[in-house]
Image (cartoon, rainbow, N blue to C red):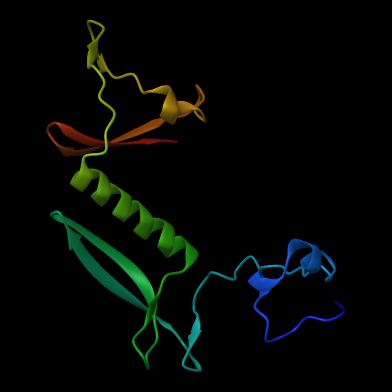
Length: 141
Protein backbone atom coordinates (compact mmCIF):
# COMPACT_ATOMS: atom_id res chain seq x y z
CA UNK A 1 0.00 0.00 0.00
CA UNK A 2 1.73 3.16 -1.17
CA UNK A 3 -0.83 5.87 -0.64
CA UNK A 4 -3.65 6.82 1.61
CA UNK A 5 -7.05 6.22 0.04
CA UNK A 6 -9.18 9.28 0.71
CA UNK A 7 -12.46 7.40 0.32
CA UNK A 8 -11.43 4.71 2.85
CA UNK A 9 -12.08 5.66 6.50
CA UNK A 10 -9.07 5.45 8.82
CA UNK A 11 -10.73 2.77 10.97
CA UNK A 12 -10.83 0.37 7.98
CA UNK A 13 -7.02 0.24 7.89
CA UNK A 14 -5.18 -2.40 9.86
CA UNK A 15 -2.48 -1.46 12.34
CA UNK A 16 0.15 -2.80 9.95
CA UNK A 17 -1.18 -0.59 7.13
CA UNK A 18 -1.26 2.49 9.36
CA UNK A 19 2.34 1.92 10.46
CA UNK A 20 3.51 2.42 6.85
CA UNK A 21 2.36 6.05 6.81
CA UNK A 22 4.48 8.86 8.25
CA UNK A 23 3.61 10.11 11.72
CA UNK A 24 1.68 13.35 11.73
CA UNK A 25 2.80 15.84 14.36
CA UNK A 26 1.15 19.07 15.36
CA UNK A 27 1.46 21.63 18.12
CA UNK A 28 -1.32 23.43 19.92
CA UNK A 29 -0.54 27.06 20.70
CA UNK A 30 -0.62 28.08 24.38
CA UNK A 31 -3.44 30.51 23.74
CA UNK A 32 -5.44 28.25 21.38
CA UNK A 33 -8.30 28.01 23.86
CA UNK A 34 -8.33 31.66 24.93
CA UNK A 35 -10.93 34.07 23.55
CA UNK A 36 -12.00 35.91 21.59
CA UNK A 37 -12.89 33.27 19.04
CA UNK A 38 -14.00 33.56 15.42
CA UNK A 39 -17.46 32.46 14.35
CA UNK A 40 -19.45 33.36 11.22
CA UNK A 41 -16.37 35.27 9.95
CA UNK A 42 -16.51 37.68 12.90
CA UNK A 43 -14.97 37.89 16.38
CA UNK A 44 -16.99 36.83 19.40
CA UNK A 45 -17.78 39.30 22.17
CA UNK A 46 -17.71 38.79 25.95
CA UNK A 47 -21.18 38.52 27.50
CA UNK A 48 -22.14 37.99 31.17
CA UNK A 49 -24.64 35.23 31.89
CA UNK A 50 -26.43 33.96 34.98
CA UNK A 51 -27.56 30.45 35.84
CA UNK A 52 -29.54 29.33 38.89
CA UNK A 53 -29.44 25.69 39.97
CA UNK A 54 -30.57 24.39 43.36
CA UNK A 55 -30.89 27.93 44.71
CA UNK A 56 -27.27 28.69 43.80
CA UNK A 57 -26.81 31.70 41.52
CA UNK A 58 -23.79 31.46 39.27
CA UNK A 59 -22.62 34.39 37.16
CA UNK A 60 -20.07 33.76 34.43
CA UNK A 61 -18.82 35.10 31.11
CA UNK A 62 -18.96 33.54 27.65
CA UNK A 63 -17.77 34.55 24.21
CA UNK A 64 -20.89 35.07 22.05
CA UNK A 65 -21.06 35.30 18.28
CA UNK A 66 -22.99 38.48 17.41
CA UNK A 67 -24.44 36.83 14.29
CA UNK A 68 -25.55 33.31 15.27
CA UNK A 69 -25.65 33.88 19.08
CA UNK A 70 -23.58 30.73 19.77
CA UNK A 71 -21.76 30.83 23.13
CA UNK A 72 -18.16 29.67 23.61
CA UNK A 73 -16.19 29.16 26.83
CA UNK A 74 -12.45 29.76 26.89
CA UNK A 75 -10.25 27.51 29.04
CA UNK A 76 -10.42 29.75 32.15
CA UNK A 77 -14.21 30.16 31.89
CA UNK A 78 -14.62 26.42 31.34
CA UNK A 79 -12.70 25.58 34.56
CA UNK A 80 -14.93 27.96 36.57
CA UNK A 81 -18.08 26.57 34.94
CA UNK A 82 -16.92 23.01 35.62
CA UNK A 83 -16.49 23.80 39.34
CA UNK A 84 -20.03 25.19 39.45
CA UNK A 85 -21.45 22.02 37.90
CA UNK A 86 -19.40 19.82 40.23
CA UNK A 87 -20.72 21.68 43.29
CA UNK A 88 -24.26 21.45 41.93
CA UNK A 89 -23.89 17.72 41.24
CA UNK A 90 -22.50 17.15 44.73
CA UNK A 91 -25.52 18.92 46.23
CA UNK A 92 -28.05 17.08 44.00
CA UNK A 93 -26.61 13.60 44.39
CA UNK A 94 -25.15 14.13 47.84
CA UNK A 95 -21.66 12.96 46.90
CA UNK A 96 -19.96 12.64 50.26
CA UNK A 97 -17.47 10.90 52.48
CA UNK A 98 -18.96 10.19 55.91
CA UNK A 99 -16.54 10.96 58.74
CA UNK A 100 -16.89 11.46 62.49
CA UNK A 101 -16.56 14.95 63.91
CA UNK A 102 -13.72 14.93 66.45
CA UNK A 103 -13.06 17.25 69.40
CA UNK A 104 -9.70 17.65 71.13
CA UNK A 105 -10.94 19.78 74.06
CA UNK A 106 -10.41 23.06 72.20
CA UNK A 107 -11.27 22.55 68.52
CA UNK A 108 -13.44 20.40 66.32
CA UNK A 109 -11.70 18.62 63.47
CA UNK A 110 -12.38 16.12 60.69
CA UNK A 111 -10.03 13.56 59.18
CA UNK A 112 -10.06 13.35 55.39
CA UNK A 113 -9.94 9.93 53.68
CA UNK A 114 -6.75 8.81 51.91
CA UNK A 115 -8.63 8.71 48.59
CA UNK A 116 -8.67 12.52 48.46
CA UNK A 117 -5.39 13.42 50.20
CA UNK A 118 -2.74 11.73 48.05
CA UNK A 119 -1.37 15.09 46.72
CA UNK A 120 -1.56 17.00 50.02
CA UNK A 121 1.41 18.12 52.07
CA UNK A 122 1.84 19.78 55.49
CA UNK A 123 2.49 23.32 54.21
CA UNK A 124 -0.86 23.59 52.42
CA UNK A 125 -3.53 25.92 53.79
CA UNK A 126 -7.30 25.49 54.06
CA UNK A 127 -10.01 27.97 53.11
CA UNK A 128 -13.35 27.28 54.79
CA UNK A 129 -16.32 29.00 53.17
CA UNK A 130 -19.54 28.95 55.24
CA UNK A 131 -22.71 28.23 53.27
CA UNK A 132 -25.04 27.67 56.23
CA UNK A 133 -24.55 27.09 59.96
CA UNK A 134 -23.79 23.41 59.27
CA UNK A 135 -22.57 23.52 55.64
CA UNK A 136 -19.16 24.59 54.36
CA UNK A 137 -17.05 24.44 51.21
CA UNK A 138 -13.46 23.51 52.00
CA UNK A 139 -10.64 24.37 49.63
CA UNK A 140 -7.14 22.97 50.18
CA UNK A 141 -4.43 25.20 48.69
